[in-house]
Structure formats: C-alpha cells, structure tokens
Length: 225
Image 1 (spheres, rainbow, N blue to C red):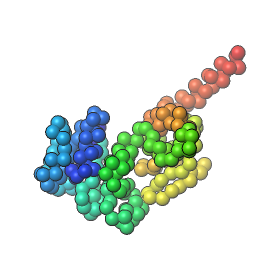
Image 2: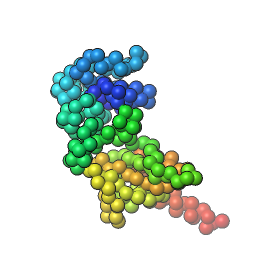
Image 3: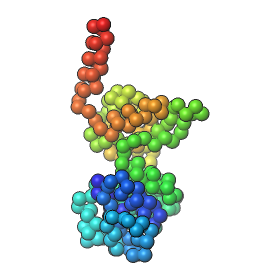
Image 4: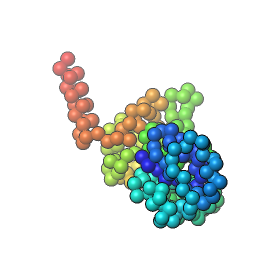
C-alpha cells in the first residue's frame, strides 16, 4: 500500500515508521520542515513540506496512487477537512465528527494503533479478555468484498458471532437483515485460539459457496465411514 500521512508529530512519525517496517510506502506532509526531525535517519519515504489539504502538495505526495490518507496534524479543523481518519484533540468535537461518519481517534501509541486498525483491517485487536485469557472481545475490520453482504453470512463463513458493530460513532447490535457497510468496526466475542482463523476470513472472502462445499464434503466423508 501507499499511504499519505498529514502531520509529522509523534503520532504521524510513529505511524510512518510502523507502516514502513511493514513494507508499505509512505509520504509524510507537514507545514514545518523541522517536524521531519522526528523521523528516523533511515526513513525511506517522502517528506513534503506544505499544507496537507493543498491539491499540489497532495499530488506531490502521491495521493493519486494512495490507498489511504491519514490526518494527524495538530489542528482539528485541518484533520476534519481530510474526512478519512482524523485525530481529534477536543473530545467535545469527537462525538460530533463520529456522527458525521469521520472515524476519529484520540493519545500517541493508542492513537497510532487505532489508526492502523482502520488502515490495515487484517488481524484482531483484543479489547477485553476473561481472567483465564481464553475468551476475548476483539475488534476487527472486514475487507471490501464483504461490504453489502449480510452480517449472518460473514458469521457463518467465520464460524463466529458478531456481538456488536460500531457504525458512525454508535453501537449497533446486528439483526438477521443487517448489512455490512463501509467503515463498520466489528466486535467479536470468541476464543483467543480462534481469532487468527476469524481474522483471516474477515480479511479475505473466499469463493461463494466454498465454505459450504467444504463442509458438505466433510460431512459426506464422515457418513461414508
């Protein structure tokens, strides 16, 4: 992926390093050239000085080929203009922006982790676990191939149950007809040992009917014995 980051503060530089370490290409934009000092000496990405919502600056950063754009500058207004993933400093604004459909996150490594969850939906982030550590409440995203499909179909494919969905800043308990939408954050209660398989299914949809075909073959095999 190619990712453009607006803002080279602690969060922006942390994200840039993590994403580069994961093999992604990164372009960082900041109005203050001194801000780039936060990037390590071996940073291989692009460093562009300018306003992060200026068209020419964005083109220079490779926005036309970018898979994602992250706004983590020190100004709420500038971040919100981006309308992708915005870091909000004022908690009174955060709820309003969430309701407008702007995913917002709020302190440094936690903020970076939350943004990464939205940029790179593969994998699961445990939010809670029982004292034994066996059962967890995990937050996951799903790939675009699942969008528009019923939650029940994803649950069947992943052999799990989605406890609730965070959608536009509100919690939603899915019903039989609930359809997956862009930006949904899915919360699953499951055994920790099953999270890897669940995350894989959420991140990549198999061929239609593949799961059912495999299950039928397995059942047929058992009956033959």
